[in-house]
Image (cartoon, rainbow, N blue to C red; front, side):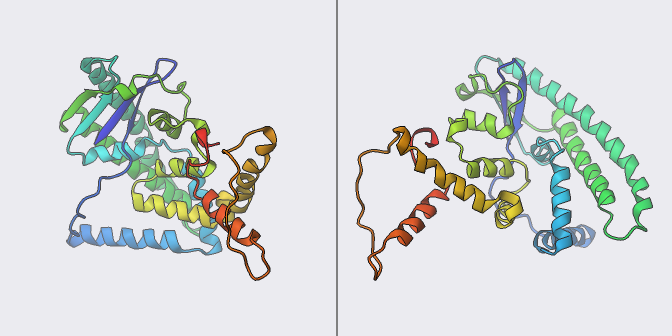
Length: 299
């Protein structure tokens, strides 16, 4: 498992870990009670993802809103429970001893924070039983139980990494030497700066995908989340954003911005000699890919 130690513009040190699991052979299914619990979890997860009724759509909106208040670091902190080894990459301006000390302080601080929240949600869960007689699913009770389990998993991972049970190495990296952000930058902003992508180079669709992929546990869940958001007008506003992106290059020639010499294309014509339908289709298919291929810095 790889973890990056970043230096922000205001002198703060922030850690960001991998949120995607490495590809490998799937674990064999467990037997007994654990296997039954895992199968029930998968069944409920499938029902939650694919039930598109009006009630479930409302619950999805509430659940997504609640998840906005969670710490994005939880995803990779939970992975500390099963990590075989940890590689902490740090700027070359820091020694391995400094990086090790910063890592230990980070683990201890996160441990105190998640322990406090674990106690809070564990104490709140019994109180939510009073809401059982009310009609409809007890979403507050589910949320408190879910958050208690998540904090417990994070705490177990932090204890495991903090007590030296996981081999940890500290390697300098020149890519992390430049101060990044100002301490208030979002996760996707920091990681895009590390990989040479400026804010101007991020199209709206790419930014949405980076945000989503960094907030979920598995690649499959990320794909499901992206598809679900793109499929619902209230999620992304696909039509509105497509219109906005189509208007951006339309006004740029008037400002003197061009993409090279004019080269008329030999478009296929229909029976009436018109090409507008094919031109529009070709343009939209290229534009909606959201690839950084239009010009410099995503122009």
